[in-house]
Length: 353
Image: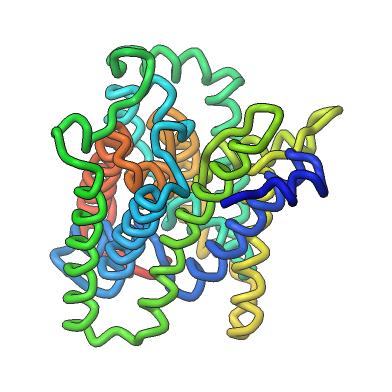
């Protein structure tokens, strides 16, 4: 994809922010209409069910992989240039951070991406939890919690100063990624058919996966024509939430993809909820739920930065390019969520997000 004509019309930072906004709006609309949420899928699975939430998550996970691997085969994207693949990965961070994030999203009743989508509909619980998540993520990135995060992440890291590609590690050809994605998609569609899910849910679940691929292709294409270095990245909500918070707290804020992504998701979910007439204020049900949600947001904020990504960043975006630590973090998120649901909710809580 040649973006030279756009690069001539506006500066690269503004263009990156606009690409983030476009990716975010696409994600926000699709995530709201499909009710995509890793927390809901993990709780459903932990309670011995293979229902709509698991099907939606599997379809998003698989279609992101299919779109991204297809784009790579067409030469529209190269995984080795992605930011999360080019930096040193942390095995210890993936395990510890993934477990913390999984526990936190069950306590907060939504992963970080889901909280942002719900906040756009008027859910004040999600607004408070999302703000706490962003503050703790920033503290873990550059603040008081950064030394602890760095120490834990440094316990066990990937060799060679870069992350590990699972396909290369297994000695598989590049086309194997597309085949694996198609396999997961087949399982998702079988489950959706068995559950007789409505086709709009399936289309919008696939749309979340498309948004991930869109971010990868747009930032990669911009990086090829940009004069200054541009990070090749896509949808994630740990680093962008922290960066978006600091955008309003610094004297000279800089535009980039992350700054456009967060408001884009909010805007997309807001438009979708408005069209569906689902805009309404909702608060905490009580003091105990407030404490629980705040604790969950803290665990997610620190856990996401330690793991190198949130439920979207590691669980879908990183996994779509077969970043080894992202797959490990995703596995630990499922384990942490399942254990927390069993120990805290004891199979009694409803699945509503």
